[in-house]
Structure formats: C-alpha cells, structure tokens
Amino acid sequence: MFKDVIVRSSGRYFPERVFTNKEYEAILDTSDEWIVERTGIKERRLAAPGETVSDMALKASLQCLERAGLEPDDVELIIVGTVTPDTIFPATANWLQGKLGNTRAWSFDLNAGCSGYVYSLNTAYNMLRNGQHRYALVVGAEKMTALSDMTNRDHCVLFGDGAACLLLEAVDPAENPQGWGIKDFYLQSDGSLGNILMQTAGGSSHPSTYRTVRNHQHFVEMQGQPVFKNAVRRMYQAVIQVLEQVNVPPEEIDWFVGHQANARIISATQRRLGVPEEKVYMNVQRYGNTTAATIPCCLDELATEGKLVAGHKVVLFTFGTGFTWGSTYLVWGETK
Ligand code: COA
Image (cartoon, rainbow, N blue to C red; front, side):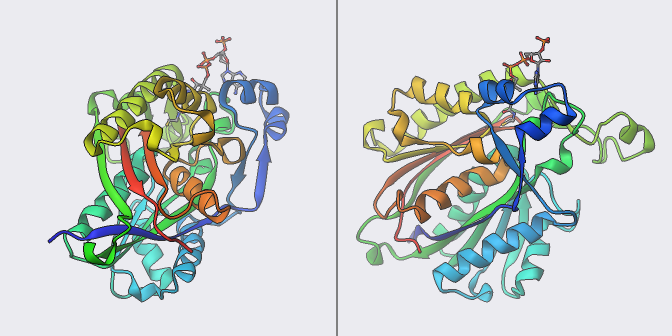
C-alpha cells in the first residue's frame, strides 16, 4: 500500500553578504534601473570566501531538522539539487551527509538546473511513497556566483547564492485524515535545446585547460530571449497539466510558487494562468536566481512568516536548462 508523503519542516540559509545592483554599476556597463526593469532583481546574496554549497546546505538542513525535532541520523535519504556542486565527485549530498554526521542515509545530487528542486522533490516523493524510507531531506543549494562571469553583464546580474530544504515524511494514509502531502507531479525535458543555456567547459567533453579558462567557458552561457519565451510557455503548461491530473481548478489554489528567475517571467506566467497576483509568490527581488534553491526558499519564507499553513493547496512550477520543466501539486502539512 502506498504511503502519504508530507512536508514536515523547512529550512533556509542565505549568506549575509548582500550584493546590490548599485555595486554592479561600479564594475559593469549596467544600471540599477535596467536590471530592475528587465528582471525585478534588486540584490542577491554572495557566499563568503571559502563558503561551499555543502556548507550552506548544512546550515539550512540543521535548521530544518531542529524544527522537526529530529536528529541527522533519522534521515534515510538525502537529495541535493544543484548545478554548482562542491566537487564534480563526490556529490555535494555526500559532503553534506558527512558534515551532518549522518551514517544511515544514501545520498546523491540531482542535476536538472533550475528544475533541480522540483525534480528532486518528486524523486524523493516516489522513494518514500513506496514505503522504502520514512524521512528524506530534499535540499536545493547553489553557489551561482562561482559560474558567473563578473565581466559579463548579460548573465552575472541574474544570479545569487543560497540553500533551502524540506524534510519529507512517509506516513500511512490512515494517520493522515487531513489529506496533507504531495499529491502529484508533472515533469518533462527537451534535450535538443541544451545549448541555449549551458556551462561549456569543465565536463568531459571540454576538460579544463588554460584555453577554456581564457575563453570564459567555465561560466554560464545563455541566450536570454529563447529561455524567457520557453520558460513562460512551459511553466504555464506544467501548471495546467498538474491541476488537470488532480482535478483541482486554479481558483482553489492558495499559493503558486514558481522558480524565481525573473519577475517578468513569473508575472507573464501569472497573467497567462489568469490567477490573482497575490497568490503568486515572488522574492526574486531580494535573492536573484539561486537555481535549485529558489522554490524551497520561497516555501520556507512563506511558512515561517505564517502565510503558508496546514491545509493550503500549493502548486510548484519550474523551468531550467536542459530544457527541463515541471510542476508539483501538494497540500501543505503542519510544519515547524
Ligand atoms: N545591463 C544593461 N544592459 C544590458 C544588460 C545589463 N545587465 N544585459 C543585457 N543588456 C543589453 C543588451 O546588450 C542589449 O543591448 P543592445 O540592444 O544594444 O544589443 C539590450 O540590453 C537588450 O538585451 P536583451 O537580451 O534583448 O534584453 P531582454 O529584455 O531579453 O532581457 C534578460 C535580458 C537576460 C534579462 C532576459 O532575456 C531574461 O531574463 N531571460 C531569461 C534568463 C533566465 O532566466 N535564465 C535562467 C534560466 S531559468
């Protein structure tokens, strides 16, 4: 018999250092006005020198576990969504497990770009749903400034660093009369469009050489407009699809929580869906795009501010490199 999979707690850690658009004005041919008008972003966070993705993931995870009243060893599965791993191998999830002092879990990274969180969440959901494990820690963590070319205004202004997570628990449906938990998801990808948003070098196709470094091939390479157009179209489609699957009309949704890449992408998706602006959460203005960390960060902010409470119906939606996109429908549980 399948289990219900409920969100038990959340956590987040964003570095203290705020990097404002004004600071970019000082080093690039850009302006606060241009960045705000085209993206909605006002500032983002910067990891401290030497601060790694697993360090940030650790702080978010400890907060999440403490709120749930659990010890690190209670967790049996750790997934980290990231495209900025501490090392190519081992996985950031392995480093995180070591830093947590967890000895029970199996742990791995999931690389699906900005869709990394929704992909990770649904992977964990399936592992828990079939009864294999009770607790899973699902983290989105990124140090996007490590992939940002601070001399290239086309992309560096978009990104930031940070980590956030959710703790999932599998319970028997009889113990969950409220019907909380993850209900369904929709995930897709189109691998023919990978070259529109990528990091060329550092993998096995273009190993690191002085040439790849000199040619700035270790940074984000992106064609902004096709990403923008595909993001709106695919995220709209993903929301409609998952709501059809669960037979819930958009009017019944309390929160639409989308990947935070650009305020204009989120607003265009909201208008296309025809849902009220107040139900579509946005914090991209404060953090920029933190890739796999944006969605759990939004959920943690909403929950800790008391705006997202048990019984709320939530749709998560995302789009990213690959291209990858998808959505999740869930009923928020009683979190701490
Ligand atoms: N400051 C000032 N000018 C900038 C700039 C910056 N930071 N970045 C680009 N420009 C310039 C361009 O050089 C161009 O100049 P030109 O007209 O003289 O050639 C002009 O602004 C318009 O550029 P364009 O690319 O058409 O702007 P845009 O409205 O498409 O906005 C993005 C650019 C990147 C903000 C937008 O395309 C976007 O957000 N795309 C999605 C990116 C994304 O979310 N990636 C993460 C994936 S989930």
